[in-house]
Image 1 (tube, rainbow, N blue to C red):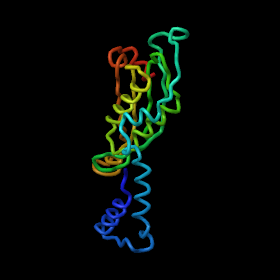
Image 2: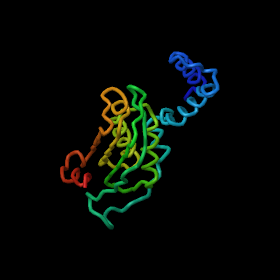
Image 3: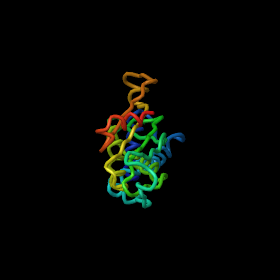
Image 4: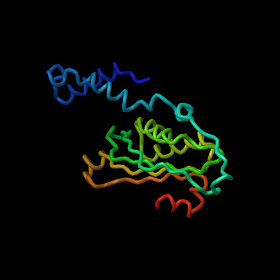
Length: 191
């Protein structure tokens, strides 16, 4: 679990190290506010991928032969999330996640896909791992090996500091199963 008391103590130390007075009116509650914010935005660090899969495992039986072919896919696009880079603790923002899978006997509740993306993003992360974690959880819940995750994001460690390129965006594609081996299926994702 996230130790908010320790966060408060360390944030106070950071304020002092920056030359600030943590006892002045504008900063006096900052350590407590930061600790509360961290508990919220890093909530996903409290759970493993297996625990997230269990938490959001809401599926419905599906008969694929009744109305679709073996390569029909379900895709939830443009799920807005944010995360924090584990290298600089810098914000990854304007982040959208699109998740696709080919049903294999059951389908997941659509809101659960967004909840999975949200919870996985609430960790100190790198964008590549966010995609891999979402794909792993989706495979566990749906029982389908065929999962794809596309993420587009801006990284403040690149846009607001260092190289300072504010228009730079990063796109990652995590492809599993048929999405990895069937080029035409992968191309359909980008359409």
